[in-house]
Image (tube, rainbow, N blue to C red):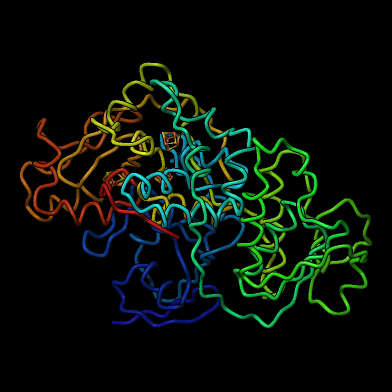
Length: 470
Ligand code: SF4
Ligand code: SF4
Ligand code: SF4
Ligand code: FES
């Protein structure tokens, strides 16, 4: 028997034991799910998949609710989105994890510090330098003049001493390989060859836009040249400027230009100097500020904004959601460090505790928090749960603080007949997902450990040593 149903005013015919989720997907509608897996069926523990029954106005869990002939549903309106947002806030209240490491979240230019350190520790300095250049544009220069706010929040500092992050990227001398660059056919002018202007030019050039920088002085980064040469040797700054020019960025010195006039020959203009401009959608400001790394960040942000403009995409500066553990109590900090530190670090980079999340790209909780506009982070409505001990075996790690109690791993181990399997313990807010009967994690997950890791919607279950890159 078939049922006819309307999904967002699109009529679809489905078998009459189909779920609303099946029907929504058939109609091409995206519905978020956290606890639903085709193999295990509906667990209805998360309720993120709610859709609205138009006739009654009721919100129904689409992964469990069956279709009925003639029903009309809406999968995405203000009420449905608000309900999903409220569910995400509730899940995140109980969630204790850092999506990005505190050091990266604090670096204004967003350097992926743990990943850079992993490459250095593994001996792949070229790969580490590529990340540093991509994120900082001037890794060697900033390695000498940045005030290193990242080191002030390094989690290792609470245990012994912070990682020498700044010195690490200061050492990437001339290691930036030539890269294949796409060609967009668009041209952008940048006014001002300071850190902000050149960083904008670097990002635009890497994205394939022809880029020309106009500087009224006779040299680039004039204000940095007043610094003592033993702090910032000029050859270091000039070497990094050359590597930006090597991407095809032209720089014209002693140029007096106006952004409005440059628009006649360019698709957009970035103003990275102290210059008043008429409001114009194609003219974007990149403020040169005294905090050097923030000037770089401003240039990158302006370039990304212009890139979106040139591609006809919405210019968004929204950052992905970033769950933050916040400050750790001293006993939590010690446990955190002891669980993660390398027994015999062979280098400074190997001292890093890798505070970033193992599933920071694939985590569905993070993806939905971003998609549902929870902002870069969300204010807790209750205190963060205390940090619980990690469990691990082979390449698998279980971080209980990140578990959203969806029950997927419990269902997978049960369906596979794993003894003793995973189970729920406790009640209400105190409930936990644990290996049953006091078993080890290895015994709890058994032969379906890899399936559980892949199906876990957060990083509560994750593979160690897997680098997720966006
Ligand atoms: S599990 Fe997801 S939400 Fe939690 S810290 Fe990791 S990426 Fe962020
Ligand atoms: S230990 Fe490593 S990942 Fe953690 S905050 Fe310090 S540098 Fe960043
Ligand atoms: S460990 Fe992962 S799959 Fe298992 S209940 Fe927790 S969040 Fe769900
Ligand atoms: S209740 Fe439907 S996906 Fe969780």
